[in-house]
Length: 639
Image 1 (tube, rainbow, N blue to C red):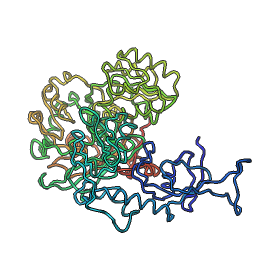
Image 2: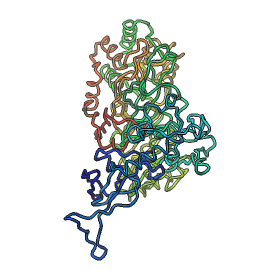
Image 3: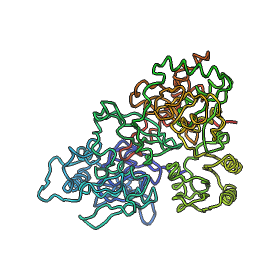
Image 4: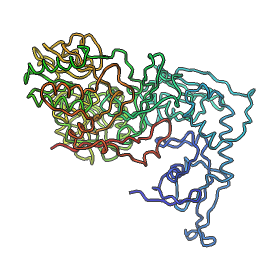
């Protein structure tokens, strides 16, 4: 347990763990010190010199080692120059002045220095309204400008660093956040500084340019508008948009996101999702999201806007009639794209009529993963096995956490048939899975906390479970496949069992297409209009994640809530409402309230998922949303 240190900042006594930086200690005291280059997730660099403060340290007698007293108090030696608060750790008895005349003058001068070479294009800059330079200038900057237009620095604008990120070199203040994020945190040094002094600029060193699946995060942490995304560039102003909390549906990690929405003329006046931003959850995705989730198209055009038959009462009646005719011989089939609430009602209906309920998945072992949970922040003394999966493409934030665990000293064993980007950070790499499992067995025997992340069939899942890891995590193909296993769905990987059957299928385009090709009668509940939905006996228009309230269960068994951000397309309904209406026609009573459905499945309430950690907000630096809606909760392990 770390030792606590007490210091005084602007007359306020603050107690923080030893090793805390002065800038973070000030945050805890509610004192704002202006920063640009500093970010709490990266090693301090002291590059911008913006966080200058006066620091005094207690004087000690060199002969005795005892504090020197002055007027009954420890004597404080003040340095003759200002110091950066982002590079100085706290010490017992330290005194800090952030608002003295000397400190304010230093902060003011550094801001003025930044502004002398920064373009005055705030009216057209994408960062306007959420720009750290704007905020710091207003709070700490000079009241008057000595800007010389004839001496303005000119640099290349609109430079493509890759196919997703643009650089405006005139705006760049060379804080180095983007470079350090890629090299320190991600371990992919695809950005770097080029030239010296006033000619310094950011360049990409990879081919293809900016070759990283985490590239979008650099636009969040950039304190000015130098880095922007091709997707959002000139798309909207921050104050024009509304925001709603959500969960990324692109992989099973369960990253917390914030959907920024706005009514848009080119979309026919519809309210659309303009951008996806990270929402802080230290246990899941910290401050980050990957490019898969950030640039996912949440405004797709091929939406099923109404049921077929075109009147809901007729469509519900037709679906109930066909399912009633099949009775217990019907098959209820889902995939992991559905919410817990949707999954629960479909399983409840199948159970009520004595029919089979399947979840389609090519990854086995679902029954084995309901006994473990999150592996948290693994480090020295822990061991991690990654087998049969390329986390970088399949679950990027799991990749980042495994890489960071290795950085902290964890034993990382990778066992994959092909090379992956995790190999460079692994303690041992095997191209033979059996050899990797054997190495993991030895490493797990000596480790305190162990985790196995796998992607494969039932046999591989069982082999991983036999290692008796603290956490067994399936890297599923969809966001909420784990939720289906928690509810007792059986796994289905082969559509041949649907031959000649009446099937109620609910999920994505590929699932519906597979069911239509195999089954005799198909009731398709989906959000997308495809050739397959046209062939289905009944098509039921459901909503997507951005259009409804609900919950997902991550691969680590963390249940998390998402909220409706945009109005539903056409006449689409939440899936759990559709199922409840069909059930009613079949003489089965099901709930249509999302919160009641979640409570029935989990023995928890939405309030249990709404817990937030106030301390986490101190860590935010950049365009990342504080988590006011809840960090979710781990489901209790099943016996």
